[in-house]
Amino acid sequence: TQLLEQSPQFLSIQEGENLTVYCNSSSVFSSLQWYRQEPGEGPVLLVTVVTGGEVKKLKRLTFQFGDARKDSSLHITAAQPGDTGLYLCAGGGGGSQGNLIFGKGTKLSVKP
Amino acid sequence: KAGVTQTPRYLIKTRGQQVTLSCSPISGHRSVSWYQQTPGQGLQFLFEYFSETQRNKGNFPGRFSGRQFSNSRSEMNVSTLELGDSALYLCASSLVTFTNTDTQYFGPGTRLTVL
Image 1 (cartoon, rainbow over the protein chains, first blue to last red):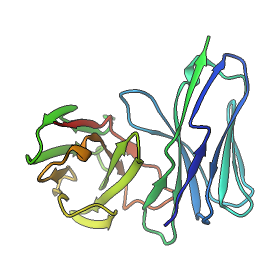
Image 2 (cartoon, rainbow over the protein chains, first blue to last red):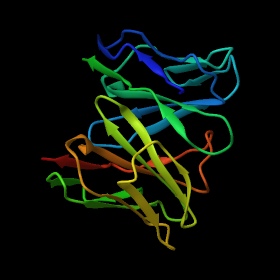
Image 3 (cartoon, one colour):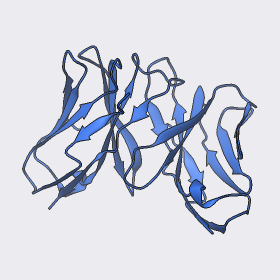
């Protein structure tokens, strides 16, 4: 069974700080997606990474897919209160059919 | 373009009852996936429908079922409700049958509470 472990589970920081969220597995994933979910809303896709070692940047967010495609990280520079939310990673299993496996998420709170 | 809509947004049922949740995808999207989200288990895939056919299924008991209509709207049904079925049920739509690198758009969810 493929599992994705996210850490930390909770993170409370001050505005302007940097942070990194990790997503780890013992299994290889064909792709990995990161989502952000705000209270009362569904998750919103932030990025998809497919190649081992791939790095993608989205403004102050930097996403990295591990060389072995078993892990990923999300780094936020100079966090802002608007970054508050639940960050979820989701791995794509083998084959072309969609069947995403989600981590349990990291709940981020950025205080002004 | 309107987003994914789910009705109802909140629902309270008692054990043993059954419930039907509805999802209207983004106009033009033909794939609808359903997920269950709980604090303990996180987001878990239930099933995906494309062109009225179930294309993929997660590891949930047969009490969980779904269907898709010709206009791509989808419903999921849970029979003989158990306390553990209390969760946020999310649906997501994508243009064609979802693959792992596609973008799927989530609705706001239906919060089901089983008493």
